[in-house]
Image 1 (cartoon, rainbow, N blue to C red):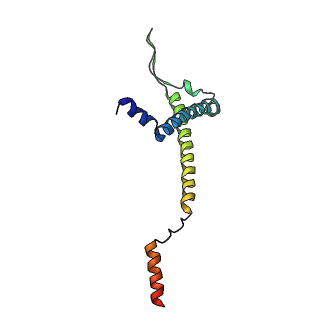
Image 2 (image 1 turned 180 degrees about the vertical axis):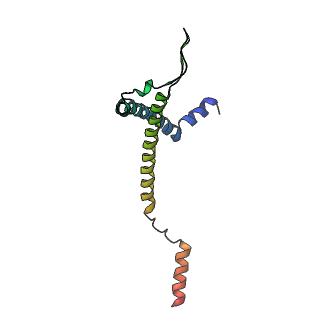
Image 3 (image 1 turned 90 degrees about the vertical axis):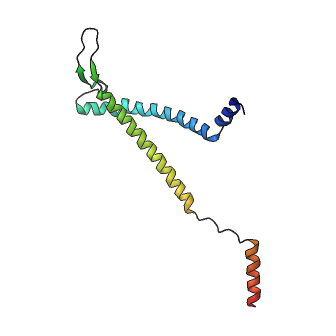
Length: 132
């Protein structure tokens, strides 16, 4: 089998296409969450803390000297990324929890017992005839 045919067979599997759709939707969802954190959640928290913009929070390790820029630890940006992660993780948790509860409801419905086989029916008839 040629390499191109193998790749086509791999790429056209349902799981690969589902994964690609999930990645695209996840990337768009990540942008929405970043906007919520940067534009809605962090400004009020910054006002409560004293008018601080979290992106500007940093610790200077080494001051700038001439053309050499300062070396800083940008912990404010890190805090925003942590908020992004927590919101995405919580959202995914809620989605998985909803899917699991839907699966449990489907599994809770008992399946009808299978019909007896021809041999079982014949043996039951023989038993009933012997009782008479």
